[in-house]
Length: 335
Image (cartoon, rainbow, N blue to C red; front, side, top):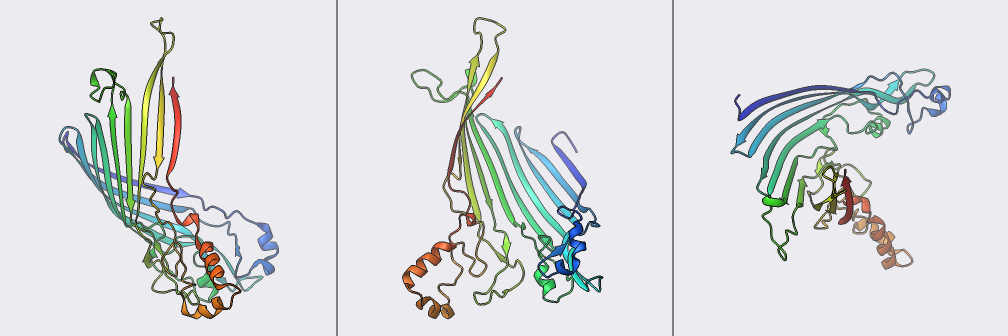
């Protein structure tokens, strides 16, 4: 539009080969014994999975060093793999295989603010609103439905990666050397020259899961109708550049840059929840110990208190949480 504003558009088609479906002659040689409810026969005749993406946006300059970008995107996923029921086949009447019957859409809107280096500070922040719906999140998601006698039903549900809200912020504060140094001094020395602090903040709403009852594990509500809790993570990196001069007496002596850094992942040691038990929505409790119908079984154990303690411990899984605070110290040298 001008030297301070622009429109942009993006269109893309990506085709990928369906993975994990190379022909297995053993499946067909022993088809009578392999065509069971728990076994899915390979299908070497699958189509390529396609992703078609559209994006339209607008970017505007704000001041001399900052800009804001607005964009809307739409993504179609076609010919995705999913388990299908084949009826009236030969030499077995019914068997399970994979077919290109799944599809999905991702719609969203994003806002991004970018502040280029102004003094010591550079800043970037973004927000994404997304709606991801489809007929299946994985290629084997419909097996239980098919084994219950239902046909190849296609119903739109929230996909497993449907994160409705996502925030990302990146703040970089840095001191330079020479005349550009404006930091504190120690005994007359610029002890923080070429030193930087980088803080990354990530926050997002929880992904969906299917709520189930404590008794019998029967689905409550709809598929992927419940949500996990929000997650927030802060990562900090502190680094310093040290210039190494080789052959100082020679004008053509080479200069190398040694970067010393300290990375702190999950700075606040936040216990973010990744996975939950579908019966309760909690990462450390599946509701078994508190259920009224289980009290007689629990009381009949040799030691009720020990049984409760060990059962509670068995539910605690590190995979249900993000990694704890982690520190990394490293060196990088650039010649």
